[in-house]
Every structure is written in C-alpha cells, then in structure tokens.
Length: 204
Image (tube, rainbow, N blue to C red):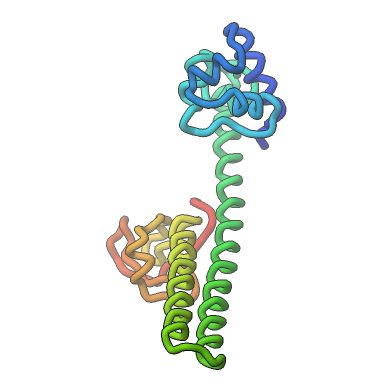
C-alpha cells in the first residue's frame, strides 16, 4: 500500500534539493502552496494532472514518486509490478464502494418518487401544486437513476459469456440494454456477439 507520509517526506526532500520553496513549487505547477503543504504532510496526494510536471521538476519517475524513494534500476521492474497490483486493488475497492453507492442512490430515488406521489395523491392541495409535486418527484428520481446507471457503467467491468472478454461499455449501451439487476444483454466489443453479461469487479 502507498505510504502517503513517506511520499510526502520524499516530495519535501526533492523540493528542497531543487532549492524551491513550497510557494515557488506551487507557482511552477499552477496550484496553491497549501496543496503542496498537504502533500508534504501526507494528508493528500498530487493529482494525476500535475504528477508528470512534478516529476519533471524533481527529475524522478512516477514510480519513484509513488514509492517515496528513488528506485534502484535492478528493482525497477519488480516495484512496477507491485505498484500496478496495488493500483488494481485500490480500483477494485473504489468500484465496490461505488456500486454500493449505486444501490443507495437507486433506493433513495424510488423513495423520493413514491413520497412525492403519495403526498400529491392523499393530501388536500391545489391541482397545480399536486402536479408540481409529482413532476418534481419524477425529475429528482430520474436524476438519481441517471447517476446510478452512470456508476454501474463505469465501476468494474461487464463479462462477455461468449468469449470471456471484460469491458466497460458505453453509457448508451447500458441504459438501453435489457437487464436483470446488473446483468445486461449487450454486444461484446471483442467478439461482436450479444449475450447476458454480468457485472464483475476485477479486470482479470
């Protein structure tokens, strides 16, 4: 697992080696010196967008940054494999959390729709307000369901039962596919065949 404290100390040491203050480094990267301070204290990691430029300034590799030390050449390949495995594990954990969030969003969307529909149906109110409540309930639930489907599309992969290929389909494919829970009838981009594809977390 990446040690943010170690990485932070490494960033601070590299910055000092280059003779830069936190403010000067922040100016080079077009960020705030507060962000640099967070990196160096281990409270945050640099964004992917600034990592290449940060490494260029420090004359280090991305691997060096992730491990918080300058890697020896003979250990480079071994450490790269370890890093890729760690990143894959972190992605799987993040995808599991996202899929749990998808369920929560879906449930809340249904509750909102039913709640507003119930209120509009059983409480005395002006006809315009009644219609407004129902429309608002539908709008909120549709937005929630949109985000739930977007999460399902991007988190994890779909497994083709014909060729075993795992892929991330387009939002359009997921939205309009017949489905049972998270299993959807879609075309595989590799073999071109349609099948019931199950949601899986890992790439392999």
